[in-house]
Image 1 (spheres, rainbow, N blue to C red):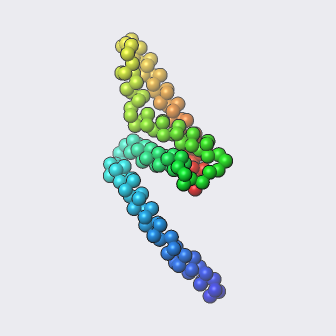
Image 2 (image 1 turned 45 degrees about the vertical axis):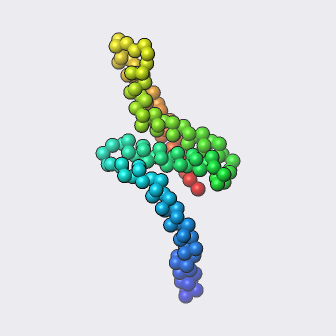
Image 3 (image 1 turned 90 degrees about the vertical axis):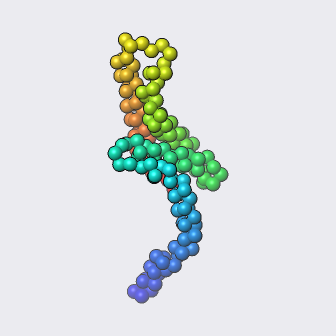
Length: 143
């Protein structure tokens, strides 16, 4: 009984001390990296969550492309799915679904409602794809 307590004490208190310097450095690095997004964070709009996800996905995507990343069989699928999610989030954050009609050179007011419906359909389709990718790949993106 006493031996078990000693083993648990070792694994809970002594062993983590070895990793403490790396954890502190990683924590400070995370604070610096996410500072801008966290500073702007508010509770009243879904866009702030999208900003945070976009920042995290970009970091994860760059990690997968770096030399530090451990290679595995399905890494190409994970990289491609992350890139799709990044593209969708960037479109949502840049108001592409609203501004693409106004940027169109041959816009006419007759087809305004039709074009708005098409853009809304595209936005819904993109969001559906985003959610399906998250559901399918979310657990495989993290170590």
